[in-house]
Image (cartoon, rainbow, N blue to C red; front, side, top):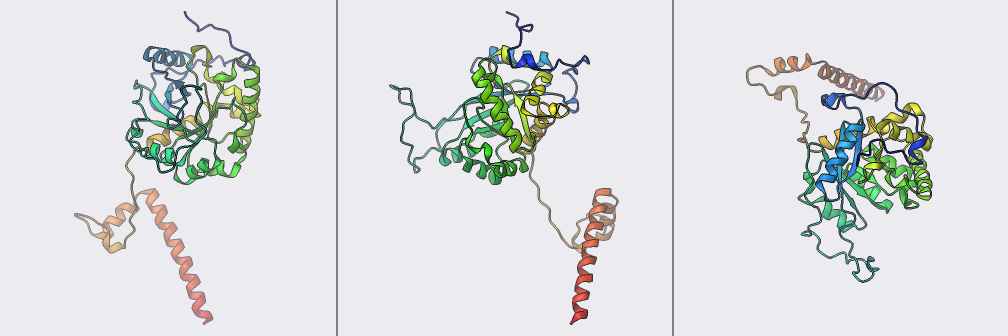
Length: 333
């Protein structure tokens, strides 16, 4: 059944209407990036997932991320009570060989893995898992603020910190300094609206947590909004999604960044993680390498580059200031 004309739910009906100008053609090159849907859930049915992707593209998204959410793969469940055990695993238990990460669902879109972390040993296993590099984006769901402290210094493997905004209070959402340190490293924070569309109590909790996150991230810095759904009817168009931010206290002129600029920054960071890492080696003028030219000639060629020339001037100015300071000290003595 075609659901393109399905009516919006109570949350979506309050949004401003989309401007009359047409959305860009999705066949444009990457530099024409406009809008991103960063969380369409893949639940194991390829046809269903492809239908979600097509729907998102028709609605105006030119970048779509397919998310495989494995929850907490290290949490055992009692088959009789269907509840996790009260006792935690012993720290010494070996988890290195556990097959916790599935193969990604690959189409011509970005793919993402989301995992819930509750133990430091689980974090170590995920960080060093062989299949982690197969995913374009890595998202982690945590409740303990100590993990955020770890991510702020050792979060190179991570792109997104997510949480369930309709489940209740989020323990770390009041830790502004830790959140800001994570943002400084380039990590993004996700708000999923999918579950808030149908229930008023969950919608109220979603708005509460969203406002707290906006405050902790200084008006939504590195925050993006996604559907986080596997239901076609729960996907909202880019302008509708962006306008949700006005319900969080954000100025309407800044709404676009939650589906455009912020997701783009996170996608670029994820690409950078897969590039070759380099290092800078500082040496003297006599050691500047050159196959055919002298050291001075090679340095002159480098100085012709504006950025390099600028750095040379900065270095020369610093050396002059140090020399003047040393000369002043010598005159005193």
